[in-house]
Image (cartoon, rainbow, N blue to C red; front, side):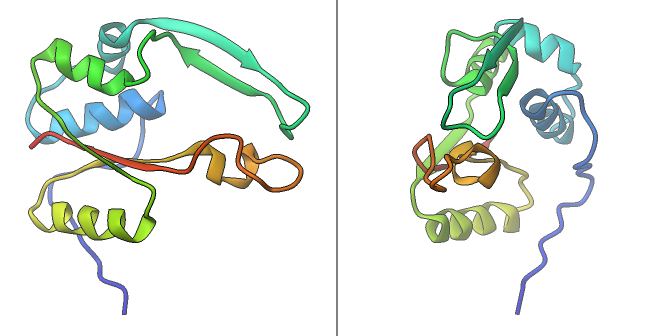
Length: 139
């Protein structure tokens, strides 16, 4: 039986960019209203990347600039926030930890490495990036 977890007053849809929209919603939940544009600037600003290799079925287009691998953590640091980050290669472990977080009424931002999705896999269906799941929360 699937368990349904609902966090009251959390609005999950909408936004202009996946990461800034996710962080904006998490911050809004905690009554801190900052625009996505401001969050993008705090993270390093706008940039552009067009990346294509023969192993990829389609090009990757990115639209943010950051010298940091941890874009959202950079933003949180610049806001004075102290996010909690967990990382694992075990989907089962992450799912259990995510459920525990959601049961406390706290929203979380989750990442599934792009390499595990078919769109970003090579012709042999092998990921181009390592598999990991990350979760960012504010408490």
